[in-house]
Image (cartoon, rainbow, N blue to C red; front, side, top):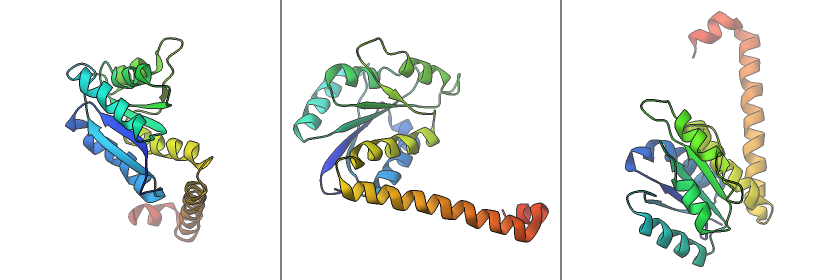
Length: 175
């Protein structure tokens, strides 16, 4: 499905690019097509609305929005569409992203936004969660997810075998 845009990704600032790169990486790995842009709920609300409408016309099935601080971006997108929205709380200077997380999870009744962890792990999980939802419809995405999970299992088994072979001190030295 790499050739079809299924996920619309938006961040409020270019400073969020290093975090959202994790979402892009996992979607690329799983072969999920996406479109990425920068738009601000506060500084460019018209751009946000227009982008959401265009993405819907293109058949986007899930939105992912990364936002920091007040974190209104996922909520504004959710208010503009009935397509599922996943919010990624971005780390912030003063509150380490806790302000972003609380802003995203405190959406009013009737306008849901799914929230993931703050930062890079949340960005990875947002991509995985989107792929899981899409995998119910697209078999190639479901198969890519199964392969990914198998690789996770194999990675843990490899690390466990190495620890058993080397012991903790030598294992740590190799890290």
